[in-house]
Length: 264
Image (cartoon, rainbow, N blue to C red):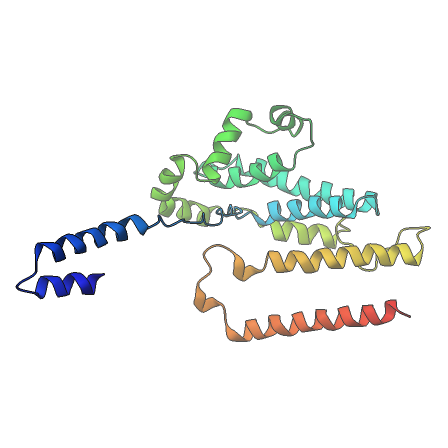
């Protein structure tokens, strides 16, 4: 159609009939056009906020206890309770700081709220934990941690002052606190792959170990450090990708070996 119109315009002695025919063709061409149907793109996936070390440890302990179900319930509940105690103590310690640590408090309250017992209100849960804030102040801290309030902008403006304050009075390292408890007989200092309760059969112990190992393998794939927000492409090295491929191949060999053994 564009070639026909160009030829018509170049013709010096084009007749009215040619012009009318070309105009009609253009009208037919416009009517033949159909609107482009756009397919909706995939829904954006919510980004999981980055938790503190103590919050992440407690969150994983709760997940593991739920995953294992009725297997060794006392041991898993003991580990979950210990990680919760570390998180609560760290949150209360932050309340003693005079500086702007609202983000860090909200970071820990977020986990406690998400993992509170079902059927218990957040207000009652805070009272049971003997927290120094009510539900309103706690919700403000959580919203600041999630970036839903303007308090986050205020925190960014005072970031330099906060770093100087924390350098003078550093926070307790949650990982060190957990390590110290493990040295003193922590409830979580258990070799879950070889753990066996009194009276438990070898088959049940192996079943528990399999469930734990599969959970850890899947968790490490989903929570790989290079998948965290802010990772730069240059951090993902070819050697790391090759190593991941080698590990994947090892799991495939394991799958073939299990299939072979299952057939006797």
